[in-house]
Length: 464
Image (cartoon, rainbow, N blue to C red; front, side, top):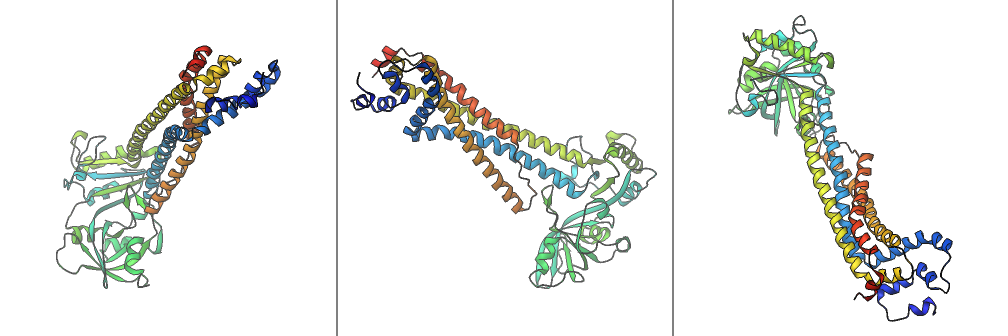
């Protein structure tokens, strides 16, 4: 029998040349065959080398096959990371506003719906007398602080600078209810609040836009504030007594692009109203939230002379409820998008199935020759399964790198915009994505592998 080097110079196909060059066949074609222990030793590694050479010989096809797996794996990682980042954003925004908070708003709403005023309906049922009644510790024992307020939009003017912003007309107890740190100066006192002093506290963005270019110290400067409903020129002169440290966004509202001023000035002079738009309560402990809701409901029903809760003209909401609602939305969205990524994995698996079937058809003579010289059905099957597994493993690894990179870029972008978006990569999501990708390759590679293994060597050698 001629040596293998002479056989490889024959006019066989290119696929047969690569196949004959394989060490396994070399030993099989030697006189006397190859000892069984030698075959056992080299079988696994030679099969891996054969698989690598086969995939490299079809680079374009292999790359397109891998692409579907890359998209699916990266999609799973990105979606889970974005879901975790969104949930951390929601929880972080609630923490900024303060924990253990209850919000009382005018207008009745159902249990899961928003208050009526969010639909543009003006409800005037909430008054300062209601807020004072809620401060009664004998009636609402677990409310450690109460803050009434109203809000609107207006214009702030200083010298030649003029910016549009939002204002919060509130009480001196605001820092006791909502977490606030001062960058400079102080918040207005109870005496200034009760005496309707013309003082104002600026958010960090407003202060920077007004005074940064001139280098002036905001504290002590007199600015003019004009409400959106005030058509006349000028505005209310107010002295700046403090600047709040940057707080970012909370519930998708920029907390730094606003100013704070005494309640009655905002109510009567800027908004022209006599009612409140909200009353916030801080509860001493999360365990007492439900009890405080019951106590506050009883107080307000008595204030408004209401006998049945179904007739209530107010709504009391827990901040945790808002978190739960938003978390439910993000969870549902994450589940939906994960399903879309799973579909991408299935599509990638179908691509593997198609490519492997084409590969089996192209290499039919090679398979027949291998079986003719002694390769078992299991060896042929394992070779094609290993090819499918290699494709999905490479796709999984590339998908991990791509998914992590995109998730990190998204977190950088969201933080640049002003949201506290955490970069969270779950190990379980990575393992899940890679595990599913490999499983997809194995499942969709089984049929082509078994088809190749069941080929009759005589029919395969005759195949053109």
